[in-house]
Image (cartoon, rainbow over all chains, first blue to last red; front, side, top):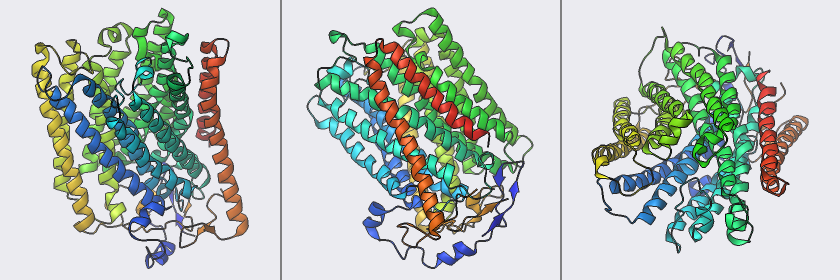
Length: 544
Length: 81
């Protein structure tokens, strides 16, 4: 059994003296005992294979959702109706949201968890390997259902990703396909969460107590608990929508005595924690990258755990800030306003800790670090606009304007997506055993950073000037900033091809990567050779 | 900690090694999995049944506090370790 000293100051395993005898012993027959070709990927129960499947699937969905977004931006390039009719435009905004949330960001986060959680806690695989395979392979079917809805009578769902009643009760057959797709994606998420929680709780290496786990593992544990808590709520809500549509119930149908506002309450009771489900894994990735490239332990490890936990719990107490305009008592408005502002405290703790980690560190600025710093800068901006929107009277003025669109894209694109890009560059050498092109990675970062801001910063101005979201046409006073945003969107979209090219050339012909290409990296996966062997930690390491 | 006393066979089809360790590990995993799945089912059914309570607002509030309680207990029992 190998032995790994533990740095109690960082809470991380320091792996440079691990004995790899067991893993070397398996190196000779890496891929000798499992199917090849397509059957390898269909039948695999290996966490690395499934992580790879999740990441490629989410990248494809990211491109598909991006194409939907570019169609939206093309339509908004100038005032007037250009290329799509208004009904189809509404379907585009709806599907863009659903695809990006449920088929791009969430599967990407699960892909990172599949690859990294077992490696970081010294586990041989996920706790339920077959269920892991099932969790992934549900997703392509859900995606097929969702995209098929474009071709059925009435077209795809067009009520926004929030699926508000009564629009969703009255919509065509595309809504039924969307509801079934959400059920399948929810089942996939719940199974994935059960797997991740069980793996973390039961399969950690001896000596790795909870408060010694890498922060990425902690953030994913909390994310998985959130998923177990809220995905059934969404599933219940859309099930009631389905019965309202086809079985003459009236949960949300006012004509039958139902309450459409109740749908909004239930949806946002899921929807706000969902925001943190998308951002917590990003927090974990950034908390891994920054210490590595600052060559310092993470500042305030315990406070990071407590802050993440606090945000998770508070996220259940703020849902109604999404619906200030539907009408609620002043006491309710004040409660949700103050609770929303309270979330800024633990979030501030996290941002402070990231900056304090960098303070006086021996920093270098490789691509993962650039994306991590970009994340902090832009996520903080998105957080501040969130604080603005938390103020009830301001929110009533800005409700459903482009200011809201700018806010959540700063949080979710520059937040989740930038962190995921950083994570890909950070762990790619471990995953495929080859180094990516650093120059191209930096180009990818700077172009993404510039075009992201060109796209979304003007939306603050548009929102403050009163331009409503989800409209295919607009007054001429909004023309200039819409033109700028559309140009930025195409630049941002094209920049992502650099990532694709870089990853593909890295996998095919990149220079060999050492076992630990990052000097400051100190978690267990860096004790393994690169690429990580197909089976790892079959004999568990001991964290001292 | 007794978590990782196991070996996987080369086909990755199952866990081999000392039967007692393997079985106790699988039993522990199954127990955790079923508890979490049960919680998810209760929340799914609960959000629908809450609509049939005398006042749906009260029903949904009870469910909301139950979910919040689950989260506090689930996270709280781990941060102390």
